Image (cartoon, rainbow, N blue to C red; front, side):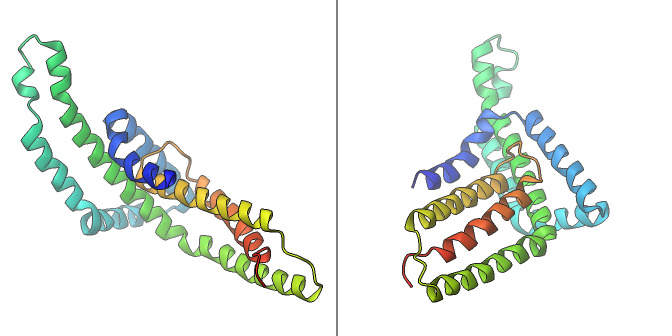
Length: 199
């Protein structure tokens, strides 16, 4: 339940905490790393524009409408009220940060689409290995170990939510965290299948 709350509220509150300049820096780092690792700059750009227009443009339009209604920073611009100006700037900064957050999400979705086959294959191999090891344990009357199963399942849940957070939020995590998480997840999938408590 705590993980669900974190995943739901973090994308909403992160734009209040992170400035547009900071988020754009993280996006540039992701883009450079994607080009270095995947190559095909033109293909990445084309896919990025397509994903943004098809799935995420509505979010940007919504926050633009929000800015039009609630951003009253111009009223305080020359008033001499520093606190009022700072508070009035919050909606505009939030809107810019949300737009960049959406762009970051589009970029990371494109990266995941390029990596998908290479991330799924080890997991399929881990499922097959877990099934065969489970059969071997059954034939040799070797008991499963529920504590190991519980540890593997909780680790998988934590990594799944961490991956969702990485996808939704411009967290400053390197791109190589994704294959690393995939490798760890494959290991825990195999362990979880092997030690599932009921034969």
